[in-house]
Amino acid sequence: MTTKITTLGFDADDTLWHNEHLFRLTEQRFAELLADYTDVAGLKAHLLEAEKRNILHYGYGIKSFTLSMIETAIEVTDRQVPADVISQILDAGREILAEPAAPLPHVIETLKTVKQNDYKIVMITKGDLFDQERKAVGSGLDRYFDAIEIVSEKTPETYETLFHRHGKGAQEAMMIGNSLKSDVLPALKAGSFGTHVPFSRTRALEEADTPETTDRFFQIDHIGQVPELLAALAA
Image (cartoon, rainbow, N blue to C red; front, side):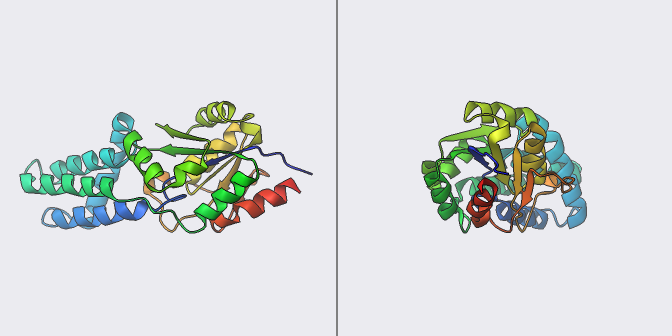
C-alpha cells in the first residue's frame, strides 16, 4: 500500500547540527567551578531541577540554561557564590552562543535529495529565537527549507498547526528528529509519521520511552537513511 507523505519536518539541534556536546562541556566546566561546594552528581541533580522550573518561564535554549546554572550556583553555595564564579558562568553561556553550527554527517546530502523530490521541507525547532536563527543561517542549511518554525514547545497541537500551515495536514507529514519526547511522540499523536534518528547523547529533559507499535513510527540509524525510508513508503 502506497503511503502519501508530502511534508517533512526536521528537528534542528542534534538532528541537523551538533548541540548537546556544548551543553555537556559547559556542565563539566560548571562542576569544576563549584567543586568546593558540592559533588558532581548532586550538582547535576540541582541543575536539572532548576532547568525544569525555568523552562516554564524562559523556554528552551542556552539563555535559560545559563540562568539555571546561576540559580543552581546560588542554591548549592547557600547564597555565598563568589561574583567571579557568576562571571565565569555568564562567559560559558556566551561562548556557546558564539559557537558555529556544524551540520552533522549526511544532513546536506539528505536535504538536497528530499528537496529534489518535491517534498515541502520545514525546520521545526525549540529554543531561543535569535540563537536558532543564527545557527540555521550560519550552518548554511536555511537554504534547503521552505520554512523555519521556532516554537516554545512541541505538542500535538504544534504539529497540527504547522503541518496545516506548510502542507496538507498532519496525516501527510513526517517529523524527523533525535528526541522521542519532542519530535516523535507528539507528532504521532497529531496523526503524523514520526521518525527517530538516535543521537549519541540526549538531554535528560528529552528522554522518553519508545512508542508502542504503530505503523507510523520508524527508527533509522542516521539521517542519511531518510530518502531510502521515504522511497520504501512510497513504493
